[in-house]
Amino acid sequence: MASLNMTIPFSISHEEALKRIKNLLTETKKEHGDKIDNLKEQWNGNVGIFSFTAKGYDISGTLTVERSAVELNGKIPFAVSLFKGVITKAINEKAAELLA
Image: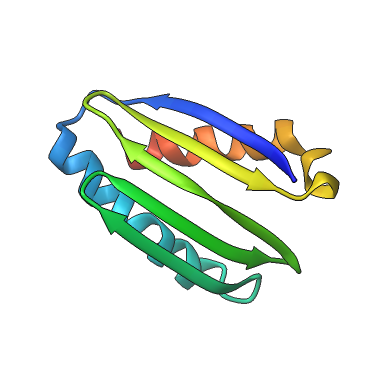
């Protein structure tokens, strides 16, 4: 497994960012249900632990919603890590839209 670590800044309130991030995986499952299976998510305060299978690959990690940024620390299969740049770009674009 390879690591995917990102810090995504935001300027909305911490409470609003946390609410939006908590809804993110559920919305993603609705939008891409044909590609995502076994979605699991557990929150303890501002820290969420998640895992899912996308196109046969297991993805897992944590999301920590800090005061002005979201910390994403994930584990992705080595084969998927070859597309790390594309994945990072897609996450940043979605985050910019979500946390605007």
